Amino acid sequence: MDTLPDAGGSSQVDVDAAHAAAISEGTASQARPRAKAPVRVEEIPKFDLDTYIANYTGRTRYDRLYLIGTCSPPLAVDALKAAIAEAKTTKDILRYERAVRALAEVAPQDPEASLNSLWVQETQRSVAAQTERLEHELKGYKNNLIKESIRMGNEDLGNHYYDTGDLAAATKAYSRMRDYCTAPNHITSMLFKSVSVSIERGDWLSVQSNVHRLRNSQSKPEEAATNESKISAAWALSQMNQGSFLEAANSFLSIPTKLGDNYNEVITPNDVAVYGGLCALASMNRDELQSNVLDNQTFRNFLELEPHIRRAIAFFCNFKFRSCLDILEAYRPDYLLDIHLQRFIPQLYKRIRTKSIEQYMVPFSRVTLVSMAKIFAPEVVGGEARPTDISSPFVQELIGLIRDGVLDARVDLEKGLLISNQSDLRAEVQRTTLENLQDFNQEAHWRLLRASVLYSGLEVKSDKEAAAAAAGAGSSKGARLTRGTHTMGTMGMFD
Image: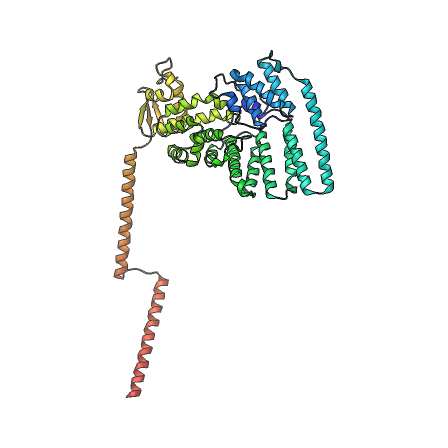
């Protein structure tokens, strides 16, 4: 299970950093070993640290600062000092100690790199005293058998555990509220708290389970729109973290704009634009990107917050793959410092690049390797590595795509061509049309022949049909004879 920092051990930041390039396609690992080394992002990101972190509230502020501080050497000192300050505003001692140790590794001479033992001791005493008080109050509420008091007691205890970083205990406290909720808004509040804890722990199955319950719960009319946007955001985030990029893209694209700044403790509108745009690029074709993303009036409001994502998608839809890949590559450092994106970036970027190569080949039956290299490997054109040589990484990439069945083509190294094995589409359409015409003529011929046989009375009937026809003819003849005799008798009477 992915875990953010808690009292039980490693954080999701530590774990994700060690497994950025190792995640398997399709699903995120639910049980990862302890981290060995974080991902190092040497490039300076495009965002300003203070402006970036100001968008978030709650415990995710520390998580993101700690990730940046341990992965980005240029921002390490500033991020870790901010993380220490953030940790000291809470009661989570383990987070404070972890940030101080990280700062001591990169800036041992910094005054904040030494542990403030006095603050730690005072916080420990305060936490122990408050825990004892809340547990004693809850016990009294249970003895009085007042459901509302018991619910509020469990909620206060869960909030206390959450603030101190004991996420497992917080989960248990919130789950015990369920039996004492007497109003729909109580259930909704409890489920949102459970979702927040599950997201921080990385328990995405629990997130989805609670989201399903939230969808079936009732909310006040004035809160329904905001709650729906938060529910959709949590659902989309869980799908992305499980590696279901197409499903996640569709969920991000359907998040109502009412989300705004109402869920900044988990995700911001800027995150929705980036996560949704990257998942869509990695899982949708050009037509789907145009109709579902660029022409999506709801998602367009999110894309306006991250215009480079909109430009990248527009370039992809217009066959300008080099421009699209350049934009994504320029923002790679930013995405590698994102707590939810970091371990998926290698996989997402590989999918987008593969799709670009595949889409580039659609209009052509053959294309020169040099012209492809100018778009997908410009660094080897004119350099030491020849794009038409078998040892070229780009040629090896094409060979790998062919072996994997992604490209139905073959590489002609002698002529420096990538030749598609697809049949001539024009000839295929003509062949299919002729076959359909032949089938239609044959069916029309047999229908006309059967109609002529029936009209001429030449149909050969089965034994049962013949017997039934004969019986019907006999009864009809007898009826006519009876009527005739009766008529003749009547005429004799008058004579």
